[in-house]
Image (tube, rainbow, N blue to C red; front, side, top):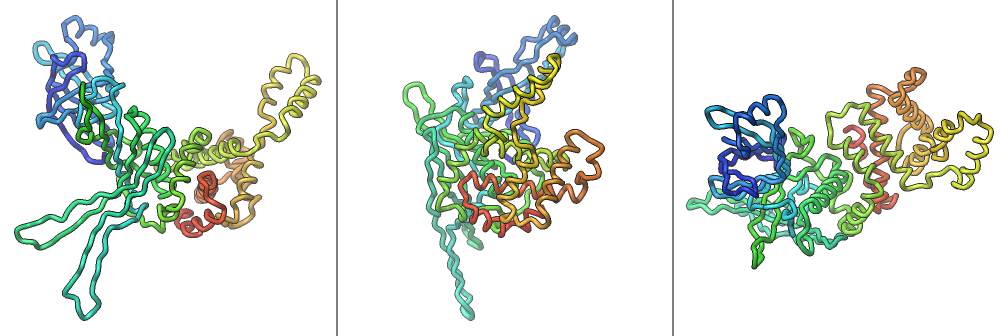
Amino acid sequence: MFEEFEYKGNWWLPDEPEKQTPGTLRFNPREGAVLDLIGSFKDITIESMFKMLSSQIIMLSPQIILGTSSNGKDITLYKCLETKLTPSFPGIPLSSFYAHVVFVGTHFQRPEDIKFKKVYIHYLHLDEWVDLSGFNIEIPPSPSKDEIIIKYKLPIPVEVSLKDDYRMRIAFGFEGPTLSAVQKEAGVKQETYIKIEASEEKPFEEHMRIIHMTQDFLSLGVGEPVYPLTIEGTTEVGETVKSERTPVGVFYSPKNIPKVTKTLLPFEMLFTFKDIKAKFGVLLNNWFEKAELLEPVYGLYFGTLYDSRMYSEHRFLSLIQAVESYHSRVTENCELPQERHNKRIEEILTMAPPNHKDWLRSKLEYSNHPILRKRLREIYDKYSTIVNFEGDGKAFVHKVWATRNYFTHFDKKLKAEAAEGEELYHITQKLKILLEACLLAELGFSLNEIENLFSRSKANRLSE
């Protein structure tokens, strides 16, 4: 996924296989996939050229474009959009398409045909997060240093069941050693990957949902953005006899991928596989099962994690909004029982002028919900000892409240109380830690376990 490639070949639309057009497909992980054709899938005439010049021509947006490269690879471009069309009279027109997803290794004739039974993903930082090695290296003690024994055995895979008839496996592969006529060196390289297998073929979008949610789970544990480095899937094809094909490579452009990725060590992470090995399946299933309830919280938190270019004010607002959303979803979201609150509103409305009742009713619609101060205070009181904030909790809550209201309403009276610069950075980091503690609790970590995890990584996380 992070590597560039280029394929030259012939390209066509699924319903017109006889009309093949030469062109070049180029993929860049940051810019995506672009197909440049020497020709067009349209029949260009003088009339259509004038329509195009007057902006009356409609650009193509085929769901699928098929191709075969010059070296014999079958390629499917999915969710395509024509970005450029250059007619030429006389001459050959030129056209370009952007493709959201590229499948290398097979032809899918229709979107509904894009199904996989097994998908293999190698994620960024996965090797370090799992940290299971198959190497056994023996170096005899001094003075005998003329022998080094290196043994390698694949680690035992770890498999768990997921809902919707899926299974996930942490598995391992290796390459090497290279044998040479003159052997001067030997090496074995281990790679950790995730295998997702369904009981039967499932649509590509369903697999991608699991891939992305697993990516987020790993990102929470690692504490840094995690992205798929490679994705391969196996699909069943054939009219009468179905058989598994050679793995199909899947390529798309992830958003906000980092230009440089730093090497991470397990002790720098919030939690690793070894921390959760005994209950890996339970925690992972909790993550998936609570996705619907906590979807807005996940989105806001990971938005700040994946987008390093986000302004500090926007990062702060996203995190405080995530904290509010989390509290409203997992705790009692009413100050009074709803029946008592409704009675209170009706009593207030009876005393309001008739022409202002509708306006007042709309203002009171959410008046039974806890205010931000209370939400934040409850979460702070629960986790303050775990994250061990310095200073007064009331002062922290007030500072967050004032900063949020200033950035939301730009009330000049709050400007002096709102955090900025280095102070804004620090309260944002503390909000992030509070939210991470909440997410760990929802995963199934005990308060004592969360405290131990943060005591190991707190200094690193506060200074990120």
